Amino acid sequence: MSALHALVKRNTKLFFKDKGMFFTSLITPVILLVLYGSFLGGVYEDTFRGVLEGFGAPVSDRLLGGCVGGELASSLLAVCCVTVAFCSNMLMVQDKVSGARHDLTITPVRSGTLALGYYIATLLSTLLVCYVATGVCLLYLSKVGWYLTGGDVLCLLLDVLLLVLFGTALSSIINHFLSSQGQISAVGTIVSAGYGFLCGAYMPISQFSEGLQKLISFLPGTYGTSLLRNHALRGVFGEMEAQGFPAEAVETIRDAVDCNLYFFGDRVEPGAMYAVLGGAVVVLIAVYVLLNVLRGAKQK
Image (tube, helix red, strand yellow):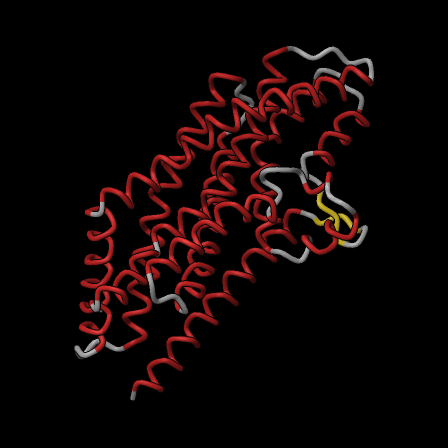
């Protein structure tokens, strides 16, 4: 345990010591929030207002702001929990490039302990950044329209934890096969550009073609995004119902923003979403462990 503690401490210190890596991870959520608010906020606002007014239901600016803000905040967190994990986990590859990984492998430290040290350090670093991002999102919601309860906030924190576990495990597996700075940059670019679309953060899955919706429904990250949506917008939908909005209008918006997800036509309940995301985390961690066990056996 002392060796694992030393490795975690070493890896975490190196992450925060690398100012470029740390500030890039920290500023990414803020940049995304500004971009989302500037370019997508107006689009979502017009869409939601059109849906509600189409049902003959006038909507206040505060309630509409809470709806748009919940959509934007959940999108940002869904992306950051995975992309920041890839950024935080770059140390694993940088150690290979610099030769530090080789130096560590010739010590008495086991390969499994070394791998676990990278995973835990990445998890802690990513959690810190993502919880800071969550705080920024909550502050943003307090300005545009706050309808969250204490339970909603706790659920959001749990969703972020699960998605960070997922993102850390996924990045650990992919980075296991990387060995150069160029590969780091390429993977980082691909993940940053593509993951938001695949998980439904940049564009709701309900807007995709039917075939693509079915394909994306197999991806665990999709359910993480939906969980964040449900908890960020639960209070807004509750307020709409309390104000007498037509149930059909509220359900239409829930479908439009992916609070309601469907797997081949069957609606997926939040409990099943947690099971899928949690199961994916367990499987990915098991794969990561297996890869490192095989590497350790090969080195022997």
